[in-house]
Length: 196
Image (cartoon, rainbow, N blue to C red):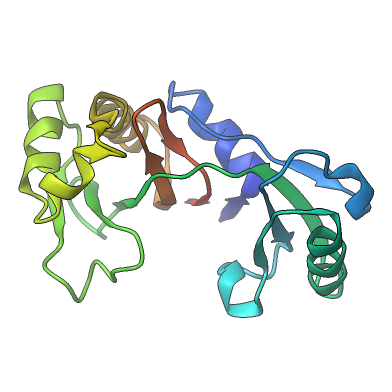
């Protein structure tokens, strides 16, 4: 079993034309030149960065230095451009028998608890991906960002691509969290992949 996180996971998604937001490993806060930026913990043994306070949005040099020093105690530090938008989660689950399942939900809401998600078996065609998005209770909310139409098309195409990945690759589980959409862009910001 092999686990891919951070940039390796995003690079794997790119092979299936899923838009991603790249990371850059930084050795000091002086390397962060654009604000706002997101600093994240890059540690193989930590799956959920938020549990170790391993994610910080920084707005200026002083804030970046403090965040860098906090995160560095637990592992390497990676920097990513900050993107504002609606945060969703996409998951692939491979049951012991049968076809893989794709789930779409709102990030921050456990998809196994709340009825705020949509499910299909893989592979998924574009029409079915559109229906998945429309089924979300928060569809009206995510369909616009700052008064403009959100890039739901990027989300729908990514659902199709992700479902094709699930069929072609030997993936036990995959999670994109968050997948961010706004009026200009839609793509994977963070991902974890477990390959069989």
